[in-house]
Structures are given as C-alpha cells and as structure tokens.
Length: 186
Image 1: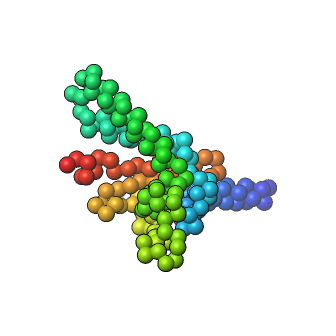
Image 2 (image 1 turned 135 degrees about the vertical axis):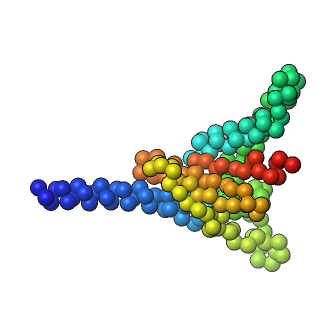
Image 3 (image 1 turned 135 degrees about the horizontal axis):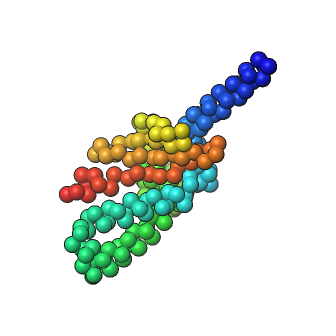
C-alpha cells in the first residue's frame, strides 16, 4: 500500500515539475527557432489565432482611445475609425505569422526577414545573428496555466509575452504591446 502511495506521489510531483518547467522549455524553443531563423519551429510554439485576436483587440482599442469620443460620435468619424480598424487588422494579420513574429522577436523588419536580409558574407549590411529577445526578461507565473515574460524596450516600456498552457504544452498566445506608452501620448 505504501508503495502505491509513494508511486502516486512521485507521479503527481513529476507532473507538477513538468508543468512548471513547460514555459521555460517553450521559451528555449522560441529562442532556438529565432537563432536558427526557423519559422516552422517557431510556429509550433505560437497559438496564432489567439495571438491575432489579442493583437487586433489591442490595436483597435488604441485607435478608439486616440480618436476620442467626439470622433466616434460623428458618423463620418465612425466610418473613418472603422476603415482604420480594417487597415490595422490587415497589418496585424501580416505581422501575426511565423515570419512576422520572428522579425519582431529578432528586432528587425518583416521585409528584411522575408528577403533573407544580407546573407552574403561580403555584404557590409549583413545582419548579425538575431539577438535573444527574452535575455533580460522577468518571468512570472500569473496562474497555473498563464506565464509571462516581460522585457523592456529602449524607452523603458514593458512588452509582455504571455504563454498559456494547453493541456501539457505551453504556447505563446499574447504579446501585450506598450501601445499607450510615452511615444503615443505625445
């Protein structure tokens, strides 16, 4: 009987350790995919439908706040805001792809990523190996199924990468952008 209790306890502890280590293994897999510029490997670590939905909501909210109540109440302003939301949604869809997320995490442009950006060894503008975007991140469990990695931009604004647990795996599901930061409030 004691053996079964010990075995059950061991299984529960191993399962908890696996779940606790999951976000760190996902972050390591993201780092490796970025370093090797492997979009397929990166896409295995990202939940793109959730990421698109979250980024769209953030952009639409920021546009609505910046437009103000007067623009939203005006029929022409509401139409213009709707068109702006559609254009922003198209940009979010272009960014929320393996190549787009890789470019953001590498700190370089999407066009540069798609074109292979300076792969010749004699190219004076050849890019350096991608930086580790989560090198100085602060990590935190917000719940047993939500984990965040927060990094600071050059101006000190936080960018929060949110990983969600889906069963036994963790995936990047949200990037909380500093859209209300000092650069936008000027």
